[in-house]
Length: 239
Ligand SMILES: [Zn+2]
Image 1 (tube, rainbow, N blue to C red):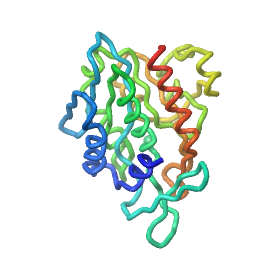
Image 2: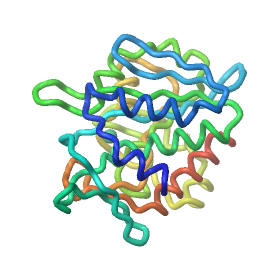
Image 3: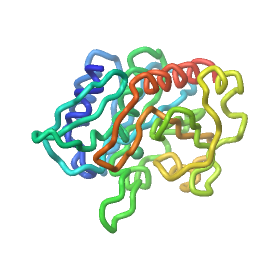
Image 4: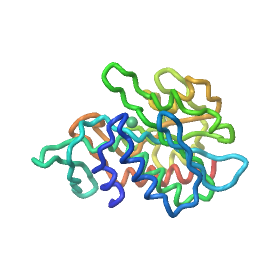
């Protein structure tokens, strides 16, 4: 849980993603990867040489007001408190997705990954600014995009706010059953924006073990985050 604890301590309000971006780069400094970035700050990562790649996605920013945080681990549950021991949001939405991406970039020989900035709404400014501005040609040799940015432990979002993301059979039934996931309708996140922009490949958004996102009571069940990692790893190896 050390890596996750480190991520939860980092302040990463939308538009202020520099510190968490530096942390991610530091974590990956020993892994042979190609990095690129764009004007808004999205990070594009390619590992290995292949004619086509699966791609994993997460967003770098969080919604919470910056403060110093201490990580509390209570059995399988992880959350954060401030200096006065009051609960504060840990940004598991979407640091859990970043945690998954960091693991897969270490273990998988060929993979693409994208980290979006400014997914969360800020005041009157709508969310998904990073996804709205990203370079879609990065996906020219990508077969599908899996984002891990969904609450809970059982959902594969295949339709986001009325936008079809992938077909019902995109993930084989035996894998859904093995990891106890099901196809559902859900809300907006970066991959939904990619589809709205016309990306033609399948995308989906998968539950990665966080609860009460956007509140001070945000927490993660670590075993469910680990289950998500195993599920996504098996998808990128077999689908
Ligand atoms: Zn999110």
